Length: 192
Image 1 (cartoon, rainbow, N blue to C red):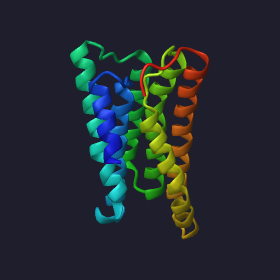
Image 2 (cartoon, rainbow, N blue to C red; image 1 turned 120 degrees about the horizontal axis):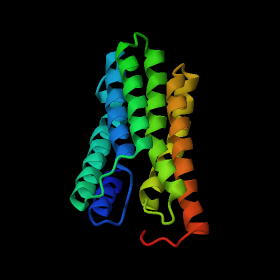
Image 3 (cartoon, rainbow, N blue to C red; image 1 turned 90 degrees about the vertical axis):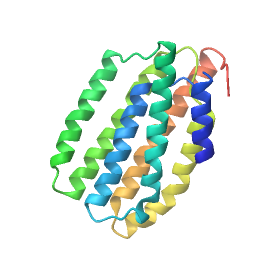
């Protein structure tokens, strides 16, 4: 996964990958909240290696997109992005006061779902795909591979693993579908 992260940051910096800052900002917030929730309800850092790895991946991605877009003068937060950020902040406050593991996890699923919406809208309106098939394809394959592990956890009584991976697979699948839609029916792709 670190190779995918290096590919992503390099692509953003070389202007080969163009993505929405808001999505990565909300991913970063969601990844921190996910790890905090797990630790808050009895998890250990050693038992949360994927969540712990998400922190540098999402925060590094957000920082790379922010710095590149700011440097180019393209850092724009649109009205829809502000609505997504506002909804996430409201959910985050609710999350802070959640006294139950189940409620906190459902709220996190809301945050992570909202995080994708700015990219979905951007891809829906775009005439050129600037997202990376390498990045999103790898994440999709990892989601598919993790589904069997999540299913086993679900059978053992942890339904959140299956909920989390199902949501992630669906969101990444929509990203890939929107990317293919642009490449197949709109303009040709200019990079990997």
